Image 1 (cartoon, rainbow, N blue to C red):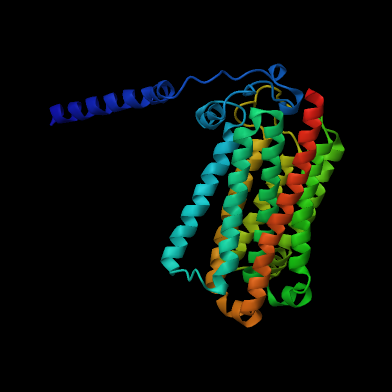
Image 2: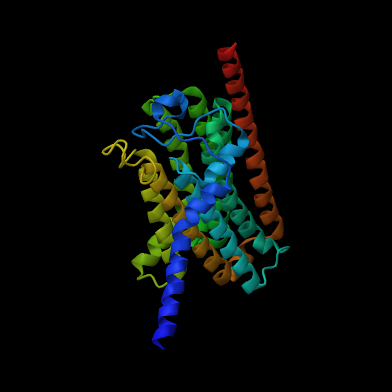
Length: 354
């Protein structure tokens, strides 16, 4: 018996040694990567306030930036938070669709499908922006413009499911006529404001840049969350027992926390150079926005399950198709706006280089 235990412990010891060697094995198996550099070694455009180290050098092949997914640098946590969140959204929805035998062709399921598409889109565009933006100045602008398209699409995808699945009757009777057109406009305005601020202002960024980003996005959030906020407030005043309402509450709280860290460079402002790789504000923003999206997804799935009768009483198939068609119209308008400003950026960079 003692011999068997010793053999087992020996096996565990060997396994532990192999696990400790795993990072080295992975590093040796990948092509040699350029080392990260200091902020003084990259152009001003790529520098972040209070982040001193961990920048990837510009001008390398695309392969390097894709493989930097496995490198330690100051964007890697931003990439992985949204990569893992995108996988979590996809797996959770797939499990729900199989368990519920989701009717993919039904009008009732269409807003849910577009919401999931919008969630994965914004998470994917965001991780690509943080992964690939260091290639060049044009790549930096291009991928962040793509990121802003994803934000716009996600805002409207959220508005769709909040409107169709989550709103209560009192709110619906008052706002149903103009809510979705206003949400579409605010989604486009959010994209346009972020793209314009990125194009117009250069580092070190003035306060006006943050205003151009935060104000349109804030207006879009206030509008998009209004059906949920109204329902949650009434539910809690009545001693809330709805599981979906609690998930909606978490969604709101997580978003507000994430908005704070997006707007304020903390904690790196108080510890310059100490939060370069892990722990700076944008990473915390990404983490809270990811759990916000997962909380929202759970709430929406519960509403989809439990409020089908209300949905069918309110909405005809034609109204659902028209609303969902506007999703693609918004995406096209946002993409066109980003493409126009990218063209202006390219012309400016070409002029600077000539």
